[in-house]
Image (tube, one colour):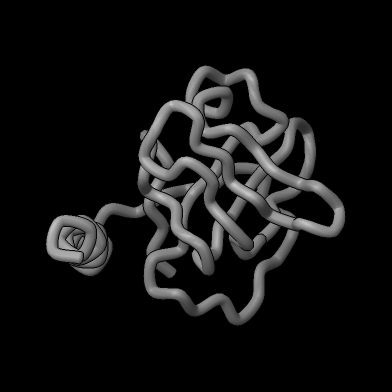
Length: 110
């Protein structure tokens, strides 16, 4: 499973799977339902429209969000997760770098 830590604006897109950790809680996988104002300081990530669950990336980056850790699942496949992990470990390997590069080039070309 390849994970990329969220370190800035514009990394998250609708349909992405994120692993998020709230303060003193277990890690949970969530699918992004929508992204408002992508790539700006006003970027908001909508996790559930019906329950009004979202986070503001600026607050997350400043350590002021209800989400304390967040990483994007790069390969898009999440078969299962065991909720006994209390920290998200992000691995940097060639596949993750290529996927991140592909995402960036898609934005420039699209």
